[in-house]
Image (cartoon, rainbow, N blue to C red):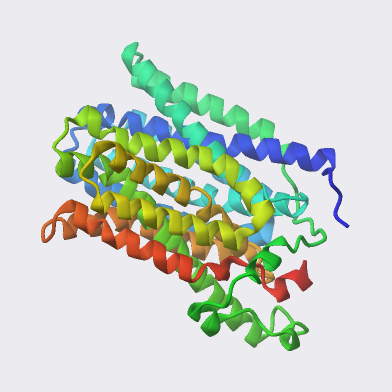
Length: 423
């Protein structure tokens, strides 16, 4: 039976990784809230900024794909430390950029570091979670959200106080490097295997197989003796990675839609002022953060499958309210339901991707991350294209349908029998 209290080393690793997740959120927010100041100083137009952000996103995907194999080879602790250091130093680039070209180079480095740290720190989170008697993945993502809030608040405060841009970014970089140096020795140096918590499998058995799982399915017991490196096992893992990536794509697509279009949807549908319309994203982000702190307990009680299935159904209900409502409180409630429904899904997908039983778990995660990140980028763009043909509110049926499909295929996040044997 698994220990009820993790060893002090494991608890310390968890706290250290909380700091890394929070740091990632803070550094990203510091850049975001300074975008107007940086673009004004470098002479970047809105059109050019859009192109540079796409370039940064492409470099982030490249960083994700590079980090997976490197983490499998050298360990997630080394890659987390390296990627976090790169991200801290890359933050200085936008502060000292003097032209669109130098800003583009700076954002390439920043995007690459951001993508690399996403994969490496989540791979480390999977390793730490294996030593815990309960799920803890969602809490890491909650600290990312808290770091983002802290970074945006500090960035707004320093701009209000008229601090020089260089000073703010230098202090953020110094703080980040100090955090990395303090946290790295406390992270797990290797993947520690522990006895398996079968909560997720038990939860999954309460639901009949979905049509997706009938295709990709979990391997039968007769296949459990196959080597994780055999061709048949590799094909099964590849199919599971694809399905998990598609679920991540849908979840992050919906999250991107909420971030970029929630306030505009309320303003367009209800004709309210910009300040009132902002309540939509406020409600979404608040319930998203609170939901991430609560999701681990819910997952420990009911399993990952339940988090994804019922969470996406709750998000679908939220999008349904948004489409149907013509009343501000009900519309804000819809966006709040989307936040709490989406809050726990992505961590469960990443945990499942890191526990497929293959010898390249970080590489598996990087592929799922890549597809998910594409969804985060594609969601706002899809709504933008649809807005030219249909009302903005009607376009919200796209994430609604995506959430129903996620609920349909939620059993894909259950731990497979092969992974249970390998662990």
